[in-house]
Length: 391
Image (tube, rainbow, N blue to C red; front, side):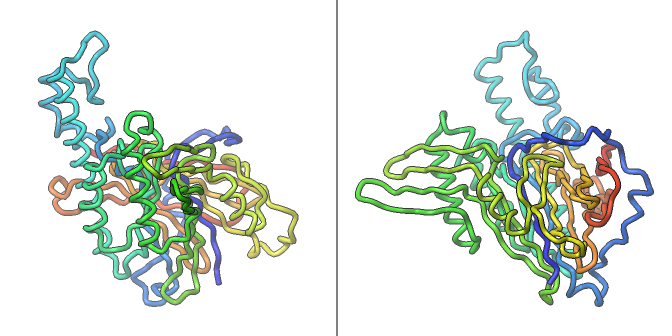
């Protein structure tokens, strides 16, 4: 059994301890070095575990400025109401109600466009595979404000329209940020998510107790799931965190008290099971004293996160002479996603750019670069997944 631990951070991630190694674009050497896992090969198909990874569907958030096709969707309305490229107003303009409503319209138009492009691209990508990926993992911030209409659009356009299981985490936009302005929104989102965790049979850090006056829900909402290849030989221990390590909230709505704790204790307990003593930031993973004379015994750990919309890159930390990858997997506002493939000997991640089907004559996506995740290393390297945008 080939065990790996993949830790998913849905919110902001501390970069304390990050190497000062400069970011650089992929050279062709880095692009060509890894030997890709070929799911079309009958020899590898049953051994290969593959996952699609992305974050931030984030209804109703505007697309990123670098997403040129998406920005064209609102070019006329932005010009009419004097909005700048990110849909905000210049400091010298005080918007009236009509202008604010037009701004809200641009947010929705761009969000729907970016989500449509990403969804259609992923659907085509999945259909192109002889062996479908085991799941699509969306790394939180599925909505912008945690409102019911946003959640309904996500449900209709993603959960009902992807042909493989969609496994979710939440992010700060889904419930943390709107607590002061829309407590019922936060309550509704948490109610929906706890039901979702149960429906998907995810082993979640969530406990519910009742007394005469209220229902108390406690825990970090983190979950874990063992995912394996078709023949069960290649497995990953997947852990999803909801928000960063110091997030938490405590509030009561109607007769339900939500006490959502930081996921720090949860993730440390999971890491300790693999002889890892702590994780505080990139490069700050420490292994407990253990006989790792056989490198095959060393836990293979990779950290995947989203939230920074424009980031689609990999930091391959060199820890105890071994690669420990920290990867931003891409996001909907920028139309990026990543494809992770692993067998008993190697693990490789490839970045992709989703492209409007009409603009790409049905192609739907563009392959970027591939990175080999595990093995020996000498120094930390930071790499970008094709940062030069296409038009």
